Image 1: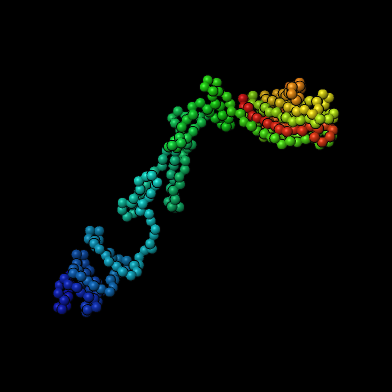
Image 2: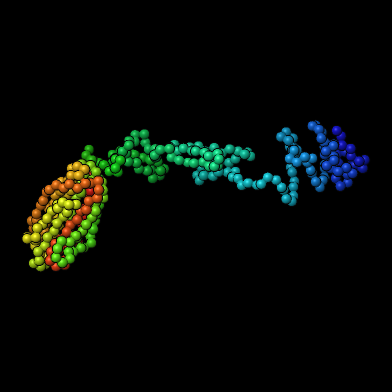
Length: 327
């Protein structure tokens, strides 16, 4: 259908809606209302209204406007923030190639990705432990490459499910279990008056000795006062006395040292032994002991040294060390 333009206007020239007798809405409704109808030339108007709300398009997929010049406030769907580029340090940028482009997340080795459509989220999770070299075993110890961060394998040291480490003994074929210190004390503690007093006491945690042959080794050391008072030392493991120096043959004014070993032979049985030395320039003979204990190793056990004398500080414990030696 053709549009009738007043004679005062030439075809394909500018028509200003204020100067046209017919309202532009009427022109749009009645003049360009069928498929194939066209409107050519330049149309200047104060309002461009659709005959029916949200029904008509401006242009089409095959017939598009090249440039659209607008001013003032543009009202439309609510604006949303978006990223057109995803940047990763040291990597090439991922750039959207088109409107509504899709960014695909790819799970790397040892990782899973889980999406939640309702929650609009992506969950990253490790599907397993760190993947090491193909020759890894369940007990292998991994170390990390300081440059690339890759997991490497130490072929000789191993670690078991209890965290105990076995490592080569030098460059030979032998191996050793790594020991550790449970207690180290350099706090001096003396007896108080007459009677038996705890000098140093240490509670061994439950399940410290977990395998037959596991042992605790250590020593206590200190001084005797330079007087003629009777003095006595005892090392105790739970209810068992590991070593008792007695009170009749201890010297005065010298240093002393007591060593001990506690070895697991069962869940509630142990071999215990100890020996003592004292003296100044030349160590004097002490005494030695060996016995058995029946402490339940799945619970805590108190290891301590006691001093018994007459006056304060007749016996002073000045240091202690307790180490664990796995079988």
